[in-house]
Length: 166
Image (cartoon, rainbow, N blue to C red; front, side, top):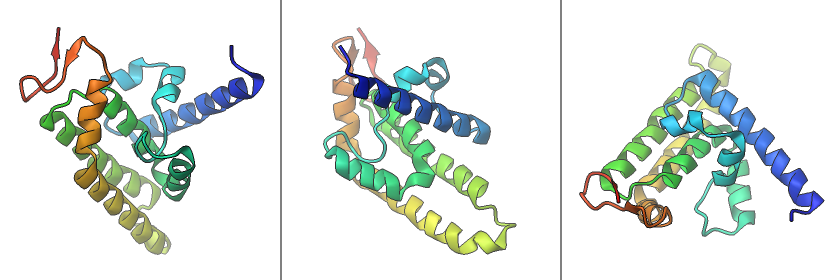
């Protein structure tokens, strides 16, 4: 049974995911088909902000706050990892999606025609590059581990190209 505090937090999380989802759709960011088929409640259960699940919540919250402009990327990324197939190809596709969506979101939030935003654009670009580099260097073990948490009906990376349903 949930406490009142947990219910309020859950509702807040759902509203936050709903707002992020609206931004993702408005910017037409790349995402897996499952994204559009899942409820806000289901996505809120998956979404944890920036950083791996192994990080303490306080650190994830601090990093998410620093990267607040890019939470839309983190939501898509968290779903990608939740649906991980454990293959190198799937991981590369998820990482490429982050890079492409980052470029689209950067152009949406800091258009080149608005020259007065160029300093903020450069800071945002540097944050995006840093987050992409962190993904490229550190996220492969988490990708494989995420597939392992999906359950016995998926054999992760069995063919080298895709997960195999049993």
